[in-house]
Image (cartoon, rainbow, N blue to C red; front, side, top):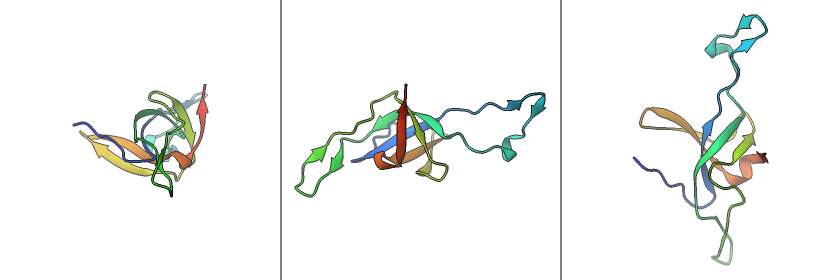
Amino acid sequence: MKFRPLYDRVLVRRIDAEVKKGALFIPMNAQEKPLEGVVLAKGEGQLQRDGNLRPLTVKLEDRVAFSQHAGDPITLNGEEFLLLREGEISGIIN
């Protein structure tokens, strides 16, 4: 199944966090969700008041940072993704 976000929305796959801290293993349910991800799909742009679309700054495969409570979780083909607005993205990681 293909998914195409609308307007200024971006589909992101979270990047897995490190599960080992020193000699301790942290259980999955005790870990915070990763705050970084990779852009897999994006909309055409942000709709302006005059009806024009402003292109998005992020590109496909950009590695991005976002806050803990940003976006909406979405499940496609049994895999969990995050649907964010471009404004919820804190920055692009080089």
